[in-house]
Image 1 (cartoon, one colour):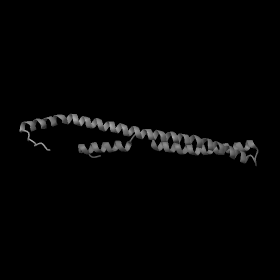
Image 2: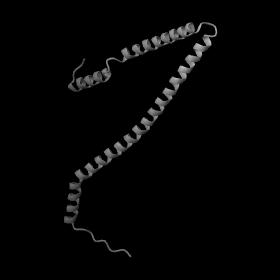
Image 3: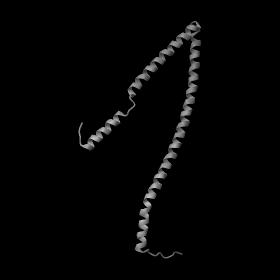
Image 4: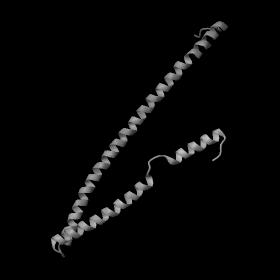
Length: 138
């Protein structure tokens, strides 16, 4: 069975509207706090997954390092079949030093391209925006 609805008086409607308007700041605050909590939870989950992934990559790197050591030792042993063992180790060592030098040179070139680590393009873009707002040209 339904109960008949009575229409509230205009004074009650005004009080309800004023009460709603008074609640807006609290509601906005609640919304912002809820969004921040959601953001924290999402970031924590993603960082946890990234941490696990990074740990697995480090583990794979350690295993690959030991595999490289075994391959280097097998190269020395294979080369020692045709040369004295000291010469085989010396040749393999020199080849590894040359490879390390090439990789280091590539790394230095890459670092020089990235220096200084300031966002120069963004700084210039912001300066252009400020000039545009002020009505100035370059």
